[in-house]
Image (tube, rainbow, N blue to C red; front, side):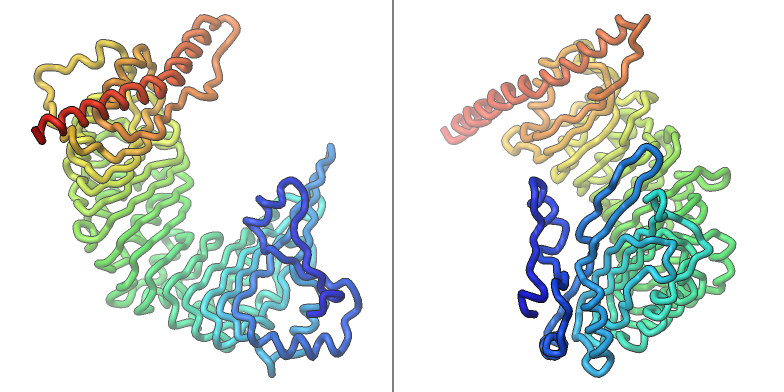
Length: 505
């Protein structure tokens, strides 16, 4: 386009480098009325475009005592949409990727742009996401009694104009917006390999269609209520047979347990579960048992991630069904749930999962744990590929490092340093940082991060001033730990060098 009509604008200001990493480097905004010559030039070069990502180029929030309002500028001006309308459909864009990210005012009659002007038979990837805002408050608006005619037209024409889409992503906060049209669009696409619809629940008819697709590898959905899932029965034979990555978000854990039982793929590699509320009938142990019963449990499942948004302490026996998963490489437990593990449980995990690369058993630990620092030796001995370990430990005192006579003391290979880089210990009290530094340097001499949960702890204060002072002393010891650890690491390196020289001699 002529530069006098569409000057290239780049982000300016102190945060321009950061904005540029998230948004397109150039924004097209018409600076004068467009002429017929401009349309002809656009019509000539438009078919050569392969990827376009119309995004919100700025999101400035004005704060006031009574309300917040969001203002947006778009990368594509109104004139450009008119030009697309003029050349459609006889000169369709040969796009392969369409990514649409916008903020929209929900009080308008039409929120999305006429995206059907972009799609054609070459389109392979569609990524649609709109955050609908209330005009007065500027906050996200989740009303369900709204419709978007422009978006519905786009979804209804999608299977006809772009039947070869393989990667489909649809994210919006409005639950009932174009739900029927979305379901029809998915049912009209038969070459999908990755589907992500994680803000609204798909109708059973759409899930039933997805379960028959022979090339579907990745599925990221919000699981509908259990009664709706049962209405899709009977499920076809070989349902979700090629699935490898499964992401399920749900209100209750029962829905995830049921849907996991529907998936029959023997090549399932990754399972991610995000649950909002606890259930009286479904438990973490029941979910773990369903994972163990899955056809791919002992052969291909390598990654498990659980995000549980309620406060609960999981007992050690909750993890027993997962121990036979010998191929496991990542196990992450986050949210408000914490694992109350002991030394025996951690020892069993280390011995069972010798391919583990990341093990995270808390985000905010609750001190209902009996695991001691001695349990770390089992991971140093049995898990040679472990790179990140987050386990809540009990309080660490000088007496902690006196090994009980009955405790198994695995032998370590001192000539091959363990590759662990990140160690999280929860919120134990630390009373001897030098002893802990010496101990950790003997197990994991390549640590870059030793993470604890004492930073930012809110003290009681007032009458509890002594407790506040003690917490400050503990925090200071944790800060001093890493300097002592680095000193011991240098000593360990000298010991290994000396030992290697003696071996050669």
